[in-house]
Amino acid sequence: MIPAAFEYARAESVEDAIRLLGDDPEAKILAGGHSLLPLMKVRFAQPSLLVDIGRLSDLSYIREDGDRVAIGALTRHHDVEHSDILHELCPIVSYTAGTIGDPQVRHVGTIGGSVAHADAASDMPTVLLALDAEIVAQGPNGTRTIPAGAFFVGLFTSALEPDEVLTEIRIPRATAGWSYQKFHRRAQDWAMVGVAAVRMNGGAHVALTNVGDRPLRASAVERALVGGAAPASGAASAAEGTAPPSDTFGSAEYRKELSKVLVRRALEDTLG
Image 1 (cartoon, one colour):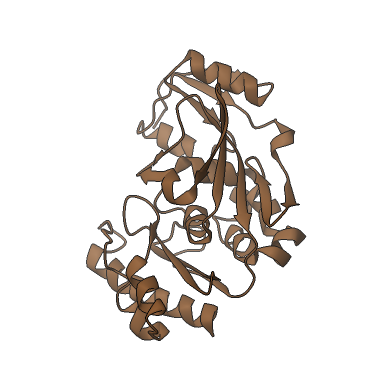
Image 2: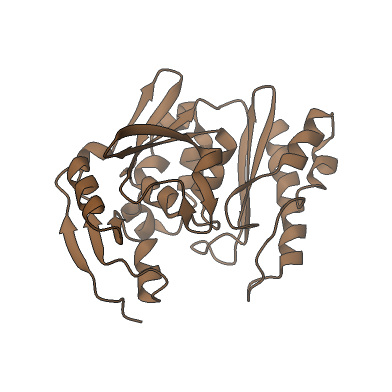
């Protein structure tokens, strides 16, 4: 299909993008475009204005920042995948970036765009949720930091205000044990179900992809592990609190059973 009519403006800076967003409450940010443009083609999204921030090179970086790694919002998936800093300090992020779409997508799509899009079937939001990452947003009233657990609030809905720009993602160092598992029909497809597991704070953090309207923490699994459960028995509660979709690729019941299998595999990798 053809998108609805819209205006286009190229932002010269983050502040310029914030001004443009404030002038039009129906405006949307355009970065790589791989998430937004398909929705526009089926008219699920109909922004009146696209604010292009794709050329703001100062938002593309990966650097150490104290006990965290800071990733600029316009950093391409390809650069996240091949970052030596992430390979050393938080390899689950670089590994997961390498599983997103195909090479063409990874060379154009951005980590900030993937996160701001807040698609429950997207891989990176799940990993950030498991890591207790932080999302930095800048708006007309300054900069604020949003925990990943509070950032994803619904399907394609985040905690960003309409006149805010996601500028940075901050992740902790996490190298002790990790795994990202997902099941899909083809390599470039969205995950039918995905699981991120990270050994942190003396236990394991587990988060799920595409089993609800947002990425979800597998709280029942985490509680079972704290109680001494083995990966197989802990994974048995993976579907608690989930509400997977049913579609042509699989029913909700199938996805619930699949989540148990993938959680077990992820925990075995992480804790083994």
